[in-house]
Length: 225
Image 1 (spheres, helix red, strand yellow):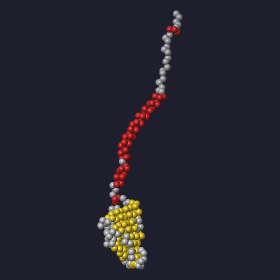
Image 2 (cartoon, rainbow, N blue to C red):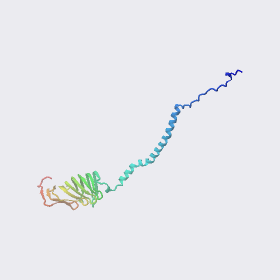
Image 3 (tube, one colour):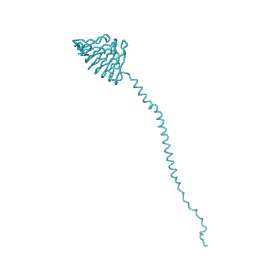
Image 4 (tube, one colour):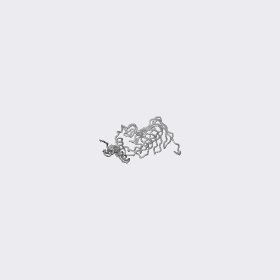
């Protein structure tokens, strides 16, 4: 018996199929996924920052107002040496006559008691008799409550009745239109030149008296002022 294998009778093997690789995502799809991932982080962070700013905005906006209110609420004795350029003080005396004190600069030495140091002070007032008095000096101290004015350094006093006095120190009482000085004084009046160790303006500005060792050089008859 002749046994042969017939090749045509062999079962045919199924054709081999290569496993298909995982599909590759397009580039545009990958970029979109990346943007989505960034937005998932950025949006919550941005929202958080906005919420913080909204909470702080009223405080930031009102900081200037709070500063100004705090400054206005400072007590006078909490601020030292307040100064004012072209200082001016006005008032009336006990007879309701006006007076004014001015200076190039006024510095509060004692704000609680109203004491002001003045640079180049000037004062003018009207006496009860209606005469005008003008005084100037290099330095001064003005006591606002008492209405006193202490002057020193080249004190010059002019009275509109024709008197002119020069000294180094003087005190002016603006409340009753009086003045006095206790240092050497020189000056002139309608009757001539006068010298003394001091002076007084009394009787609400009606009288001017030279005190101490004093003298007067009278004008000759017909001599001009």
